[in-house]
Image (cartoon, rainbow, N blue to C red; front, side, top):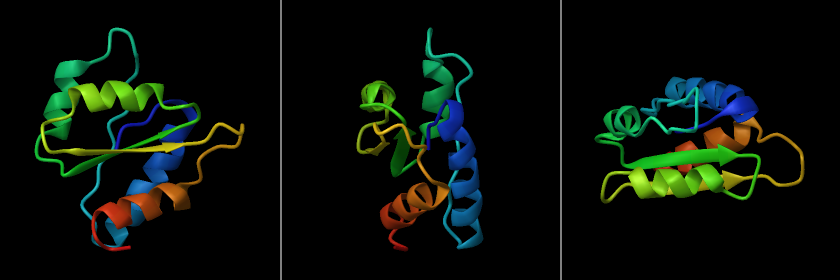
Length: 102
């Protein structure tokens, strides 16, 4: 999972929840977006089957992640544009779905 800002807090809780259910999950939280830490992301995403990108916008970060993700990795945007934060349970459900646990 890749998340920034307030979405990263929810993502951290979702990762914890997914791990408690036996799902292998992790969080990459960049401190800066420009320049984007491409090498660090590639290291973190190596071997990942999927990357969830929760955002409170139309998907700007997910476009960058799609560009950088290893070949064959599913990038799954989870966007909210209504001003409400993405809930940890929404993120956890997406993680579990992609892991085949949902």
